[in-house]
Image 1 (tube, rainbow, N blue to C red):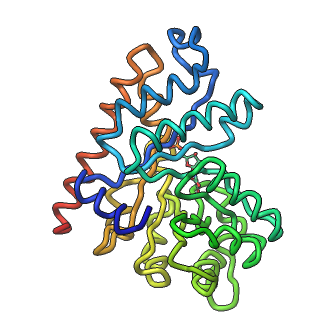
Image 2: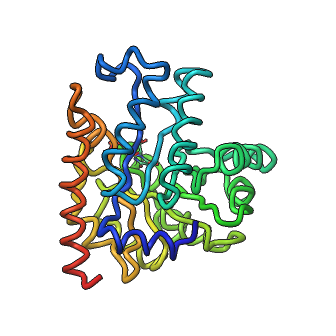
Length: 274
Ligand SMILES: O=C(O)c1cc(=O)[nH]c(=O)n1[C@@H]1O[C@H](COP(=O)(O)O)[C@@H](O)[C@H]1O
């Protein structure tokens, strides 16, 4: 997928919503427990109920890896279902990988070739040679952690590094990596006030913004400081949508929760003249 195609989807659907498929097998409605693959059955129902309201899906691999080979099979079925039935959706494997070069190369193959995701979240801590193997894949995107949504983000990410904060250095230096056009960045919705500084360094890059909903970030603030002429935002909500109801009406409740965010997004896009 290209960023042009992603933007076209956003403008057509009036939505820059990414739905996080952080599916916990222990929180599924009882009615799904008899299914051969309850996690996939849940994801399929959520996807079918929300695809018209969002432009991206982001399964967090932890929720699948925790289930061993069975969990991994649920993830494989989910990405195959998305790619077959909803090929215009941008798919993000949230695995936060990054290692020495040859190991990063294997991670890249696993997620971009083995499972055919459009994008992967990557931790920048090990530097250029740990990130570039992911950037070697044409038509795929690396979403580099810049300023994360959790309280511990202040432990390191905002410490001074030369004349600027470490997270800004990560942004600046990564623009010198090979294929910077394949980079996007994570900035937590809970740190929206930093977005103006982020935009000074990466004025046009797409940002993945987790932390609205369950973590308390504000969509309105994120857009005020982070939106560009080309939108430049994918705003994620996971628990707020997929667990809007823990009952048998979970899919209808997911539609309602996603529609609430989509309507707010449509109003923001309109007000911005987009
Ligand atoms: O990379 C991420 O997506 C991510 C980065 C970050 O800084 N904060 C963050 O919450 N996330 C992920 O975004 C999702 C947030 O889930 P909810 O808080 O349930 O909406 C989880 O999958 C997190 O792992």
